[in-house]
Image 1 (cartoon, rainbow, N blue to C red):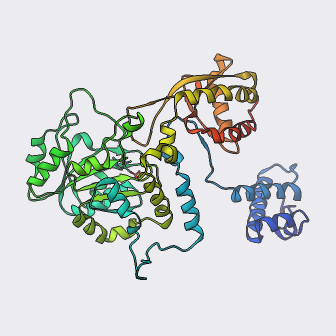
Image 2 (spheres, rainbow, N blue to C red):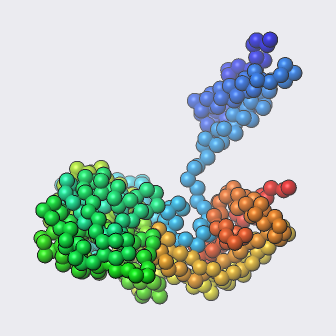
Image 3 (cartoon, protein in one colour):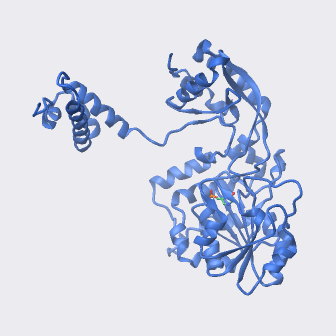
Length: 470
Ligand SMILES: *Cc1c(COP(=O)(O)O)cnc(C)c1O
């Protein structure tokens, strides 16, 4: 039986000439940990192995330590290319922000600011004041407050307005948003009781009216963000639900989900109800996201009646759900772009992407075909193809935008599955990973989110592709 392992000591490896560089780069604590871990691995392998196995030397141990240090120090959050065709892709971080917002965030990171400081009188300020006026001007609402996301907005609104009371919602609107946001669950967590009315496909005015009792705190409508009910359907328009609520001295709440501040038809895009229209229809409180159609940072925006917003701001949960300075720094200039709608499609990044013409993307696909084909070699065939992209994040779920991109197929159809998976995996390993969509035995790369300014860097990145061989 073997007793003492022939491995070098931790100290010996720390003194090794090669370690000096690692120590300078990664520091003593992490180098020592990495060396200990490499030694522990080697010791276990050595103990498990047959007698004939020789223990690894210093170089092999330091290689292992260096590799784990590199991994530890490599950034986890990486820039990727979103060629999925879904512009507001929740898993890829949703909205890309306009330059004005990027600049403001950089400034807020580096310098103190008047986040909660009133520069006019030197007293304490309220962080919502930075954007409240702008939001009211853009939506027609009396007041506004901001929280971390729309899920938080819904939670805060219900917890303020309906604690230990009932909220009436149509069965056709009991939405689940990806990532486990379900209206019934949020309702429970907020301490409110959900009263479902109507059926999945049809809800009438009388359904709401008959459900109202002394326990009712509010009537609520939830925007069907990520699905559409079609066929034999009926839902009650916002204005009619508001009328029923008001005739019983109750407030009406709308979770608008995406929420847009402008009529998207201005740019030939599909219609989506605006926040202003919802306020005008009589909603007393409207909640929506900052990083969906609005094109700003992750945030939940709550607008509505002054007295209700004041109550919401007094709820202790508001303090727990409030936004940080980076969010407000990004939100303010994004909102300001909406004051100048004539320039919005140039300056608001998301709208610029939504409105890119298919002809523009087609030309781009034709230019990119050759360099991509070159890097891939003969095992694959790259072809420019018309396709359609989606807005995403539950905004306009059934609408798609005519788009153009590249479709990559295996040159050998019998091995299509294997070769495409190999390609898709290799694209994820690029310095800047490229994320496309596998469908119909092909990899689809929608070019909508690859703007011309980024095209040459995209090609350089693509040329670093390393495909596994058989
Ligand atoms: C997206 C969405 C939410 C959640 O918004 P987040 O900002 O992602 O928290 C809630 N309700 C509806 C209807 C939505 O579409």
